[in-house]
Length: 365
Image (cartoon, rainbow, N blue to C red; front, side, top):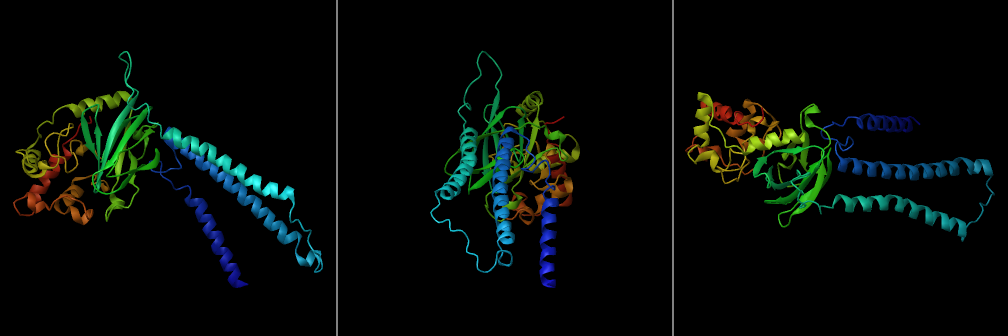
């Protein structure tokens, strides 16, 4: 008896935790708080399927409880033989038709939404009579363990932070440079794989400005196990009004300006203003010029929300990352810092200079 009570108490506690923890979603990363048309459509399907499942559970539970209490032997007697319903056409019809109806209720809107959300036929439609474009195309390349975002129509490239306009479709061409990854912005829409062999295409819409969020960004994730640092392969999304987005694009299209201040200028030289060192892999201009782009474009590094996608954005963490990237994101392809500094570890002064230079790279006012 006591053992049974303990089990019921544990069950009640777990039920209460499920109810309370269900409200712990964060606005910038929760599928239960949609912030775009696609996310809202998918959320509606989630609610529909939950209602259907709840209905089935409720009906089965009611029948189960009635069977236990109404037809128990202590009430109807030991000699009662239940009515035999084998071969009843009415019952056969009911328990065949009801599941079919429930499946149709789920299948019809699901199939419709699947095809509708996969429709990218308007991606290449051009504006007529000089009208402005009503959508944006972004080429996404997933790499170990970071994301590259190319805006082909604007001629710019970013990394780790996706910047998009609100209130219009944003089309994505997804591909991987190495292993399989999966592109996912939980608050904005479902995930889609990024494969090495082929390009996957879909669209999302962003209805809310990210500046209204606590962290100022939406969170994106890699949703496919891709290696030891899979859980750290994050990216951030900034959403702007179209006018603000156009201003950002114009700033990205400008050539990179020389560093200001003695410390930042020293960092610029260390970074490789002469074509050697870090700049061999990392571009410092919005167009992606200045590096062979094996590594992320750092043109907007000073505007970012995180260092390496997950560390708090400050100079101290940046210095730790430069000094030993494998410690913080195992398996990443950033070379040993010693190989970029004549076989020597960076001194504290050099780390300070590099951090000052990278933090000065900004296109936002």
